[in-house]
Length: 112
Image (cartoon, rainbow, N blue to C red):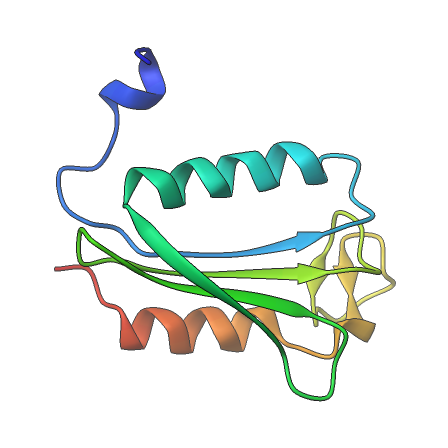
């Protein structure tokens, strides 16, 4: 496979954290993109539920030294998990806070 996406792969490992809403009309596209990123890093993911939620989490350590966390929220559309607001671009009922999770993830997996 060649093209702009391949030519623009990072020179150093980059970790990934992402949140997919299964009710998002782009869910399949986002999921395919995440799966591709995981395959490029030779990541081996293990699935586990997020405690006290209906959210699925795939955690992976990757052969290139990066890590990945993919959250799948079954009742969310195209929104920000845990965001405040009227629900148009946020999903306050998410049971998780994406901003806090992203901060913690990259604190634990800094760019090298």
